[in-house]
Length: 394
Image (cartoon, rainbow, N blue to C red; front, side):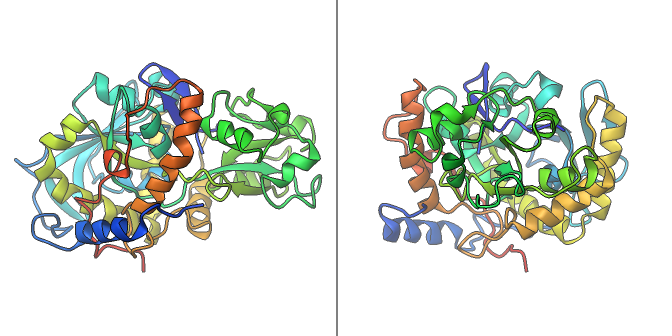
């Protein structure tokens, strides 16, 4: 079973991902409210709007992994008659918003192993034709000094990244912090910034963490659950209990978010130059992306069929079935990974939360020598400028 790589250092290096409370909550809240006020300048109807002549003829989006439900909101925008480029591990089709063709095409490019594990940020800097890519807030902090990005929509409110363990082996462990007293080995992708946070704050002991996780369940199964490991809340709980016959029992877990590493994941952002050059497009496109997430989780069947078709046609070793897709949506909702922001909007950034995360993350990245922007603020990383505040999950 794979495990997604979820944060990256700069353009060439790969690193992995996964409380709140602003230092000046009153002023930040006022700014957010003003940004999200519904005005003709920042919002537009989701459906029935043509993007032709406003957006690129092909709106290109770079994901961070193979097709899966975590990317459902972008695949939701692909209409019938799509064309699959198996060699390029990408799909192109009409960009359809709530059932209406917008007059342009959308191309979704797979990431992870399909692109040699280059990060979406690095790929956007290499290829300016990529309008938006998956950007995690921690990645954005880490790259802020050399390769800045601006994220424009957060279809996931909470990162799916988890640490999981066997509840039969560790019946008294309820949180990641509880693992410390057990001395259990905790496997993760080496170099993960969230692990720097967990060890530097004493949540875990640096002696118990092991950066040799390879994305497969082999070691977890082989040692009978004596070690904990990273995973995704929208994937591993179902896979290990239902699909993985060598295990076939529940796992327990906690999100990295709930342990204090509150980075946004699965967000869409772009290079500052691309965002500035495409503001008129983004005023129309971002609300479509917001609504696409609402439409997807409300009725995922058609888009899940597309995702599974792509898995088959790409035929690149990625294993993903209908049960995983269905369960993934259910787990994303039940774990509140996909949920409205505190302001009641699907897809907006909580600026207080980003400010608080920066305060947590900057010391972590400074300790490993990352080149950070001086005086980094939430407004350097994310914006609600293009968000339609009327779009929300019911």
